[in-house]
Length: 141
Image (cartoon, rainbow, N blue to C red; front, top):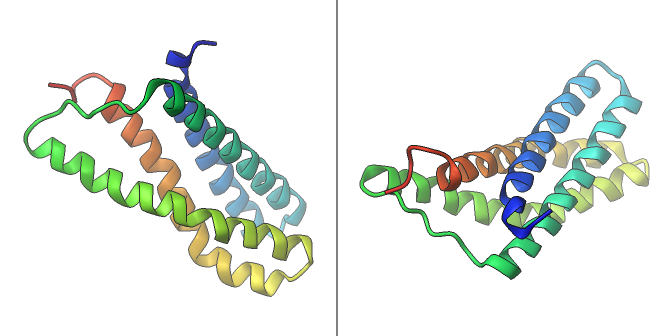
């Protein structure tokens, strides 16, 4: 695998993470705690793999500027800015959720998960959208 392959890997890891998060949510709503646990641990592992790949890519390749012009450029930044801020902000709550679940403190886990899950899904989905806007056809100059 080359450094140039990492953006598509990153988008794929974000998409997989989104699927795992949504599936984990469905499992807990159906009271399937073991399947929920497995999905959420896989989502954490997938997100950690994404972060590792993302950091490696940007350490070697730098940033890719958005080439679109006009209104689409404003749309791109309207998606990018909250994505970046929320992605960074999500690390502590995700670690908190893991710790509370590990300790069996499920009421604390549930209280934080109610707002953490939608934000985490937003970050994962917008990661894919940003990839498509940077590397997909139709958005460039």
